[in-house]
Image: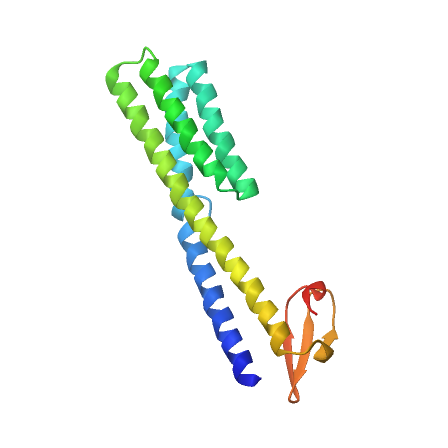
Length: 178
C-alpha cells in the first residue's frame, strides 16, 4: 500500500508542478506572460479602433471580446472557434470599409495578433483544466488504495487516513472521499 501511495503522491506532485509552470507562463500578474500579451494585443486593436470612430467596426470588436469573455467564464472550446469566426467577420468588415489600404492592413495584423494571443492563452488554460482533472483522478485512486473505513472525517477541507500507524493528511473535500 505504501508504494502505491508513494506513486500517487509523486504523480500528484508532478502534476502540481506542471500546473505551476503553466500558470507562470500564463502570467502571475495581469500584465505579465500570456495574459499580458493578450491584454496588450487587444488594447492595441481597441486603441486603433477608437481613433477611427467607426461604430460598425466597434460592434465587430465587441463580438470578439464577447467570445473571449464567454470562453474565460465557461472554459468551453466552442468560444475559441466563435472568436476565430468573429475575427474573420471583422476582417471582412475592414476590407469593405472606406479605410485606406495601409490602415486596413495594420488593423488586420493587430487583430491577427490578438486572435493568436487568445488561442495560445486558451490552450494554456485548457492544459490547466486537463491537469485539474488528472488531480481529481489521482485523489480518486487514493480512495482505492486507502479503504474508506480508514478515513476519518476532519473539518470540511481535510481528511486523515491512517495506514500502518502513519497519519496522512489530504486536503480534499470531505464529500469526495468514499
